[in-house]
Length: 228
Ligand code: ADP
Ligand code: MG
Image (cartoon, rainbow, N blue to C red; front, side, top):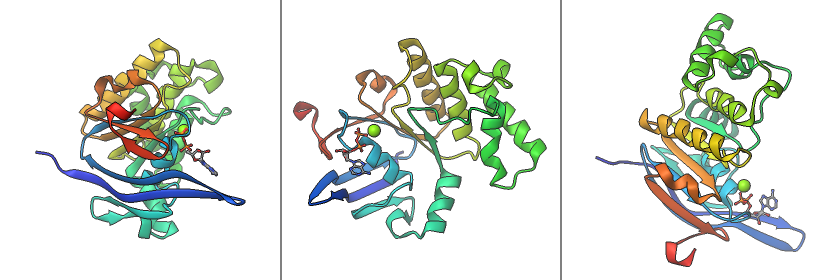
């Protein structure tokens, strides 16, 4: 049985710079099933990050709506949007975004501080997540002492601290070699198998290996495979 988790209707995001308006997203209608593994393919500048940022509540649409379960992101105030990001979404970025002065474990435990989780519990949970991404033996390394692939797996562990149902990954293999990229895809596939909904944007067609759905973006529009 399938069920729609996310529905976007006429989703637009435009940027006005001086006299020019860029339509980063030019009217997107998407239905994303619960527990989908959706891969959004598109060349640089096609609107992939814009779409992900809107779905993750990091940005707001110029027009149109985003419904997730029964909530509408476009009508939420800043507080509700912040709560949405904190409790329901796990973000993974191209440039890992780890804090260099903290160990891997501290990087993973850090976001739980804002959720008021006691220190001992933070460290326990962070250690369990480090184990889950295969880095039990790298907890006390700093990012500079880890490979790119390992840093990205730390970023995945950090994205999981609040047990989000939705994982959004923006070019997660963009800075990884082929082997680490394949490993990262396997980590994302595991999250999918655990029942999470995973949306990955990339310009790399190899990312589609585990996909249940593939969407192609060109100039802010969803296009058919034939037009891509
Ligand atoms: P992608 O992630 O697919 O490379 P983006 O979503 O980052 O594409 O960008 C889509 C389009 O929107 C591009 O033409 C980009 O230049 C433009 N754009 C993105 N962010 C901004 C911004 N903050 N201000 C102005 N234009 C932007
Ligand atoms: Mg991008």
